[in-house]
Image (cartoon, rainbow, N blue to C red; front, side, top):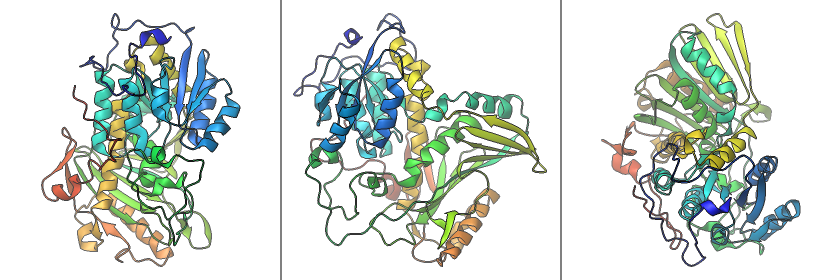
Length: 486
C-alpha cells in the first residue's frame, strides 16, 4: 500500500512541506487511488506506553494491518513492545519512523505535548494519522494540525473512540428525531474519578538512563520535575499535560457535542470557571477539583470534575447526579444520562423509560480509521481531526479559565445565575466542606467571565489579553509547531 505516498523524505529533509494544498473534508477520487479491503496497511507507533499497548492490540486484530514500526524515547518501553511485536522495526527518534517510506500510517499515543507536532510531521511526510485525545496541548497548535490534514490531504482520526459506538446514533435519534423527552433545556457533564497525589520531591527527579530526555521533552520546556514518576503523571503538569479536563474531560465533552448538540456548537462563546489543587501536598499543578460553565448560545452547559474521595477516609468519588464519567441532558419531559457504553432515559417523575447499550467504540474506531485510509476518504472518519480539535477546544478553554483565575468569591460566582451552574457550585461547596476546605479560601480560584470569538478561536473583550497568553505555548528550539497555511 505504500506506493500511494509520494513523499521520499530522509532524516535530514523530512520537514520539507508537500506542495499539495487546499484539500477539504471530502472524498477525492482521481487524486489518490483508493485501496481494497485486502490491502495491507503498515502502521508505525509513536510511543509504546500503556494506551499505545491497548491500541496495538486493537489494530493487530484488523485484517491486513501490520504493526510494522515502534518508536519510544524510553528504550525500556520500546523493548517491551518489541517482545510483543518482534516483526516491527524499532527506533527512539520519531523522525526516523516518519522518514520510513514503508510506513503508511502512524499512531500517535505520546504525552499530550507531542500530539500535534508528531501528527504534523507525519502528515507532511505523507502518512495518515491516528492521534490520541486530546488532539492538542494548546488551541493554536490544534488549528495547525487541522490545517496540515487539509493541506496534505491526509486521513487524521482523533481517539475519542466512543464516536464509533453505534449506540450514539440511537441516542441522537431518541433525543432529536423522536424528541422523546421534549426539548433539551440544559446539560451537565461529569468526571468524578478518584486519584491520588503524585508525590513532592525536595530535589529534581533523576531521569532514567533508558530515556532520551531531549526526545521525551520535544516541544516542552526543560524544567525540573519534582513528582515521583516521569511517566503518566505528566498529565498533571502544565508543561506536558492538560489535567483531568484534557484526560477524561475531552471524552465526556465530546459525547456532549455529539449527542446533545449534534456537533452544531463548535466552541462555547463565553466561559466561566474555577477550581483548585487541594487536599494533596504534591507536585501537581492542574486542578483536582474543577468546575466550569459554558455559554453555547443555545443551552447552558456545565462540567464538574474531582479526583478526590467524597471525604477523607471515605472511599468513592464525590456525590454527584448522573454518571461519574458522562453527561446529563435535562429535558422538558425528563432527563437523559449517557456514558461510555450505556445510556438511560427517565421521565419527569424519575421513572426509567428506556435503556441504551453500547460497546464503548474500541476496535470499531480503529477499524473506522483503517477503512478511511484504504478508501483515501477522510469523510468516512467518525472523529475527523476538526471534530477532535473542537471537542479538545472546550477542554483547552476550560483550562485557560482556571489558569486566569483569581480568588473565588461568592459575589463573583453569581455573575451566572443558571440553575445548572448554581447547583454545581452548591455540590462542589459541600464536597470541599467534607475536606475542611472553604470555597472562599485562597486555595480555590475563579476566572472572570471570558468571551470567545468562535471563528478566530481567540478571546475578545475584557480580560482577553490575560486569557490569550495561553492560546499558544512557547516551544523549545528545534521542536516548534509550524504555522500551516491552507
